[in-house]
Image (cartoon, rainbow, N blue to C red):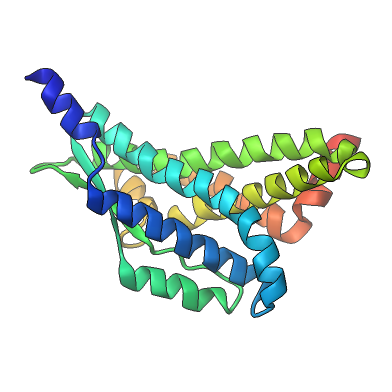
Length: 221
């Protein structure tokens, strides 16, 4: 009986699988458009690269929250928001992706602010960790770029992965309705401030300095 309940919590419904797939595709397209606008050739070139960062960041974010909820004995399911996906595409033409794509719905009669906040933290923290992993990969491959097209491609993927994940972390920590930030803020303002500050700093470094310059600064000291 216990095993049956355990398996039920960790199962992915067909609706969830479809929602994750659609959200992943739309979010990847939105980030690609935000980078190249209506340049079709550039869009086709950059889309596969962006999809790597989005796949890692978006899916680990949503699944991280689902698994943390399951650890508390709660059933959770990702629900995508069609209007939010349209907003993401529309906003991308202005160079910014408003990623109100959906949320992990927790099925609980009485969910405390603390548990909700802890579950919400899993998403942005996953993005921050992946952003740092991508940054390390970029640092390791940067010196090898001049010698191999493969390392040049890996560096580009890693740099894009850092930018996408740092943005997702910062955006989702904004304390507004449906975003993780509001749930964390309600639970613990101090925790929210620390995560938000780290995520925003990482995002701004990507925007203001650029990943390539950041990597060179790290390498040269």
